[in-house]
Each structure stands twice: as C-alpha cells, then as structure tokens.
Length: 302
Image (tube, rainbow, N blue to C red; front, top):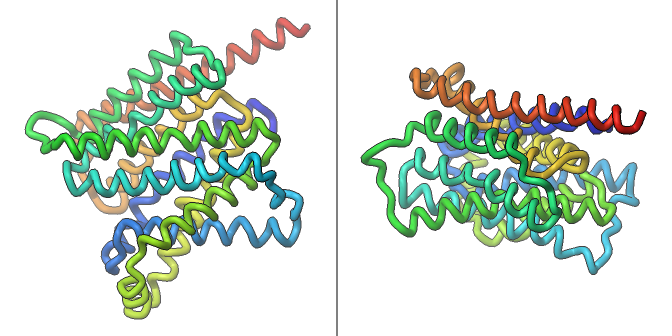
C-alpha cells in the first residue's frame, strides 16, 4: 500500500470501530456481559484472520520467540487490559467521564511515540490533539455533576493508557518485519485466551440458545467492529506516525455519535455538533500537514 493512502485507511478503521455500539447493544440486550462481548469480538476476529492465513499465506504464521512479547503486549496488555479497565470504570463513573478518559489514548500515543520511536511532536500535531480532546469532551457531554470516584478515574485513565499501547506494540512488531495480518492474528489469539477465562459460560450458552438471531450480531461485532478495523488500523500504522494515526482514528467518536443519531434516534445537541466539528478539524489539520510534508519530500528528492 502507498504511504499516501495510510490516513484514509486509518480513518476507515475508526469509522468501523464506531459501529461497536450498534452491535454491542443487541448483545447486551441478549444477556451478554462486557467480557462475553470482548470474547466474541476477538475470537471471531481470530478465526477470520487465521483461517485464510493458514490456507493461503502460512509464512505469516511464523513468529520468533524473541518477538512474542510484542504480541502478548498488543493482545493481553492492550486489548484485554483496556477492556477490563474500561468496563470496570463504567461501573464506577458515568459514560461521559469514561469516554473522555478513554480518549486520552492519543495523548499517551504521541508522548510514547516521541520517547520510543523519536517521532517529532510538531505544533500542528499538538493543535490537532487539543482540538480533538476538546471535541471528545463536548460530544460526550461532560460537565458539572458527573459522578467520579478516584477508582473510577484510575480505571478509565488506565483504559486510555492500555488502549494506546496497541499502537506502540503494533509499531514495534512491524518494525521487526511482521505484517499487519500477523499482528492482528496473534493479538486476537492471546486476547481470546485471556478473555476466555473471564467469560460466564453458562450465561453465554443460555443467551445463544434463546435467540438464534444473536449469531448474526456476534458475527457483526467480530468482523465489522473488530477484525476489519484492527486490520486496517495495523496496515495504516505500518505506513505512518503512530501519534498521527491515533488522532486520526478519533473519527470513531464521530461515527458512534452519528450512528446513535440515525439508528437509535439519540439527540445531537449544538454542543455535540460543535465537538464533532472540532474532531473533524483536527483530522483535516493532520491531513493537510501530511499533504504538505509529502510535497516537501518530493521537492527535496527532485
């Protein structure tokens, strides 16, 4: 894939991640808990990745033992720990607070990328980061009177931190020569094994037996809201700055709010629309920066 397509691929990943609420609401209504939903997402995604790879590209299955920590990090430390912290945080604070603290992830990615990969923290990146974060606050509707315990704060901030680590571990894995498919395959494998321990299997089986249509929603959350976006994000991440990718994927919140408005008839206030515009402005700023950087690079090479 050409480097210039990377932002569009990451944006598409963010839009698809924004569909998670659409599928998870149906799974919750059927009796699925947070860890059951996590297990469904990652196990179906693992199967969707490993079957075609095993049949047509077995070379992608090869991983050196010395590099296994990258995939344990992306699968267990990132995806599984993020899920555990986020859902625990939702029990201790409001959805608005949890959402805003979760989206501190781009801040962590920008800082860690500068520290580990020596990615520059440019003025435009900082402006985009601030615009996006203010946008999260407005879209989430956070304000005075929001319930917040210290434990809830730590859990949700931890969710943002662990969420950010997928970009870091993913970048480290791809710097070692692994493909996006290898990254997603082993991330899903380790997260599947980890989440399986936390699943209430009696409740899981009962929910599936009671509603045969739930299988379609399970496939949706696994393929559309996990396999496709994680794979696309990993592909985009291999071609661009991790901090920039994490800000671009903020389109997820815009997609989620739009789906809520269209499908579930959730109101969009003027404040929420202003927040969406700020997030979109951040994305435009980063894309303009990328476009100019590409022109400058061509000029230097000519």
